[in-house]
Image 1 (cartoon, rainbow, N blue to C red):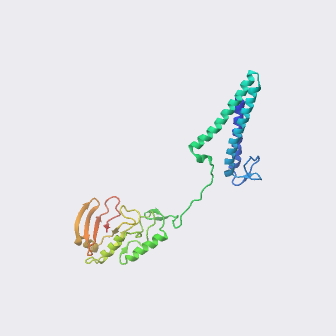
Image 2: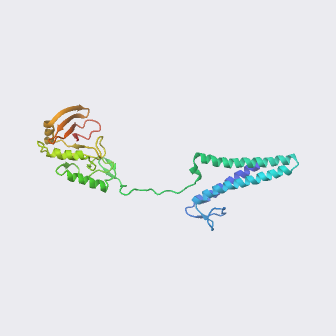
Image 3: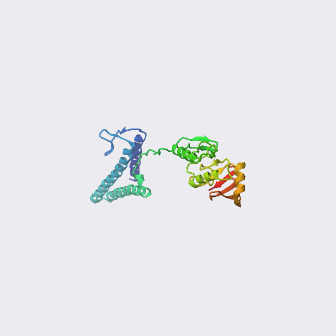
Length: 289
């Protein structure tokens, strides 16, 4: 009896696996050879998304019906048979049916406990949502690979450059995300830095050329959007102005920091970076407004 039951279970599982495999490889609608109740349309056509959930539910329902039939059959055999062997066989029918029913229900409960979504069989793939205005192409700059600047970044950079007329920028183009060399960005520069640069340019006693070599682009430890910090190239005029107008000196591991009071009363910090420290972008003035 046990051997017969094992064969029935084996062939049932085999039939279900073969039934699933015929649909798995279908790209579009597939007409099943032996339609199951509740699966497919009137012509028998179905797809994988519809077939798997329906076949799973049908299998559970079929197992419950078969268990009920076997329990009923075993009960009748046990009640009507006078022979000991008949009653024993009827009891085996009932026990096997109950164990099969427990196995099916237990498998369902186990899967539901692990993750209820396992039983939903949702095979729908959502289309990726790519936001407009975000560049997807990449470009290579001397500093590495990055995305090109967006139209909004280019416009914002141009607006800041226009306000800083008379102040040079070492590169004509702004940087994109991930670009660190071969470009200089001023978009998002803090208003204090913009006003400080204009004040420095017009300060009496300066009269020197000012060239911005670092702004809000990536690759700096203390620069960025909304930060009032820029890098300025060194030159005889600017160097002399700092040396003449400094009111205090602080020694740091990056170099000396000079406090300069401009004619307008604005206080500016000039860090003399020699470029020898790790992370430094070269010999320049690191200016904090």
